[in-house]
Image (cartoon, rainbow, N blue to C red; front, side, top):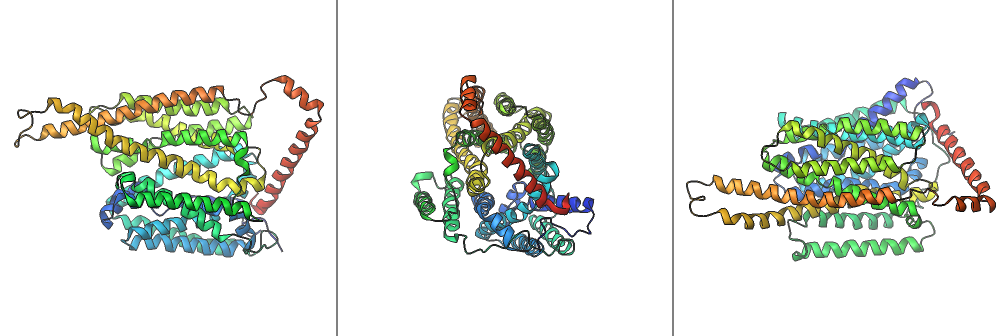
Length: 529
């Protein structure tokens, strides 16, 4: 007997919705490391910061590795058994992180947490999407909730680390997972989602090659600056290993009867342009490296005050979500919504370019962080929707892992690494330029305050220069978005030819298939409706 819902029929609908929200609130921000308390974990373990940057990337890589097989996992096990075991495992991994001092354990536990977390999350997608009914409106509500939740969890990770210690937040997350496992053992039904499918069709070697490709790449991005890039044998070897792993992964997918990944969708126009826009989004999100250097290194903020800056993005995120829901409900073309998101990001970069001064006060953060929040929310929703629009379900599931890793890891990782290197390089150049003002009268053994002022000014000069280049690139991105057609027919004549050639009938058939799929998703939600 099958049940496409999550909970027993006797559980009231409001209680089901409450349990889904509680699961999202605990599982979505769960990770091996938390941005808000990385500095405290570094000081507590005595390990280098780069290890925890690597662990942070590993969570996303684990989620991407699980995505192509998540549907088969969903259909293989009973929902209650799977959810309970997954929550217990996530709790154990979180507790493991609270007790270890070895940074490599953080890296591998983060990878496992990402993999397991995606299997939990997919169980929540179908009921929520069925409740909302529209994929675009679902993205608007879901991404807003998740992004706001991530900012709040980062802040509380920092606050708990200050008031107690860094291990406490991991213990709290572990206890929350154990409690939810017990609750869902009581309320979830004990039936399969659909016909049980075997797991031996999953190509575990492809998963291993996928993970090795991006974990080696993450090592390069995390440790590149610390080991001086190509002057390090470790960086060269990791780069070669990443390239070889990806080559083997590609060859294996082309020879398998049931490939783990599909590269077919990357020939589609909207996917290619969507990936480019996601890469440009990473250019703006990577500025967090410069922002933290400015806030902590120049303005002297403590870690809690620095974490509060991310809370200032929440009004912008909420506004982006509200506008997205309205936009998709009215079925307005995406072009100007995407344009507004990149415009907000460009506005953030311009304001920060003119804000690289020692007199910058806390109230001056309100506008740039609001713009950054709006830009992040609107672009996460709209560009992701555009990239995966009009794709067949099988093709999308077989490639969404790569797209997820591209958006959240590769794009942000590449620019974060570049900004870190340029920040250091431009500081060296700035100190050389400022050396003309240094002599035995301004810098003596009794007066070293001048050296600190020169260092701070060098950081300001380097940060200002990087934001200037980002602004120029952002103007180019706006021109690109404004001139891109976003799937609209360029000439009415082409549309007329399609009607004459009978392709309008094909379009009506596709519309019927999409409506049928929507009904299936609604049926899959079961009693959650």
